[in-house]
Amino acid sequence: MRISDFIEKKRDGGEHTEEEIRCFITEMVNGNIPDYMISAWLMAAFIRGLNHSETVALTAAMAESGDTVDTSRINGITADKHSTGGVGDKTSLIIAPIVSCAGIKVAKLSGRGLGITGGTVDKIASIPGCKVELSTDEFFTAVDKIGMCISAQSGNLAPADKILYALRDVTATIDSIPLIASSIMSKKLASGADCIVLDVKCGNGAFMRTVEKAAELAGVMVDIGKSNGRKMCALVTDMSTPLGLAAGNAPEVKEAIDVLSGKGPTDTREICLEIAAQMMYLSGKGELDICRAMAEEILDSGRAKAKLSEFIAQVGGNPEVTEDTSLLPTAENVISITSPRDGYIESINAEMIGRAALMAGAGREKKTDAVDPAAGVILKCKIGDKVSAGDILCNIEASDKEKLSRAREFADSAFSFSDSAPTKKPLILRTIY
Ligand code: URA
Image (tube, rainbow, N blue to C red; front, side, top):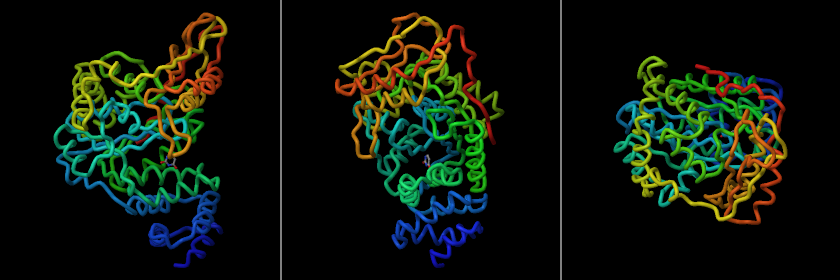
């Protein structure tokens, strides 16, 4: 196949065959297609779109372009979850232990954070001693022994996605539902789980700004997974306000431990129980209400907290952190943002809190930046809370004092107020099978 013919076909609104797509991805990964041709095709695909069979074929070709996790090495059914990324999303640290306590294997590959969205790998790396880059043997040994493992994605997981994503980032072709869906699902398919629950975030702190767009993306990803023989569910959840109270690595680990200890914010608890229940349901543990009750029992009994502790010990970390969160890194410098007026908290903008946490050092602007494990924003209020002038709305914490003033500008603009209590938005907006 001539690559220029492939580009021309999409430019003119034609439909690619599975064979053409496979050939394009193989040649691209082998380094035989220059970036300008890949970029031209991306723009054609962005403008003309990809239909269902093209999107499924693209995803499968990307998934098979590098390493894949051979889950046949794991005894029993495997389940995975994926969030499209948000501010304060520490759910994997709570969900994986709950689901593995229900007898389902959770063999999870996660990413690092980029921009305002955090990554599970950075959160685990903030726990003293924890190793996040595990060998294949270390990964499977943990899954065998304790029923769960979370490790950093290997450099060669879906390499086609790395090439396409880097070019999309600089050619204004990120915001395309088939390209986002194939990018996310290629990594999920390569990770091998039998059952996958997606948490598709929507709102100002997420890729998808509206429920409709998020539901469309969720539907496409669910279809891709089902076409590849996986059991699938997607929740569309609100990310117009941060999840829970903490944004930042060690602060989010602390909140996850709080939730596993029966404390912590109710929105974090709720979303974790719902996703865990859906993972159990897809894995055949019973009707959804039974699975939900099982998830609550596992969380409230403390078994999930003990499981997280086992996992931390297994990857070389200090398991005592689950009983004593003061063992987590803490920042020396703290500033508080206070309320300028009496009233009710009407909104807390997730994007602004995410930017504040990023400026404090909790995230990376570029892939190569180092993160400050202790940095972050800790909210002291949630939407609907009554506040008085001078009350603390949030604390910003950082190891580097100089980072606090830029972080303050973003955090300051995150809050809006009203004279009467606002109506609260639901957290889980759609469920798609
Ligand atoms: N996350 C991904 O992995 N890929 C995208 O295209 C968007 C979000």
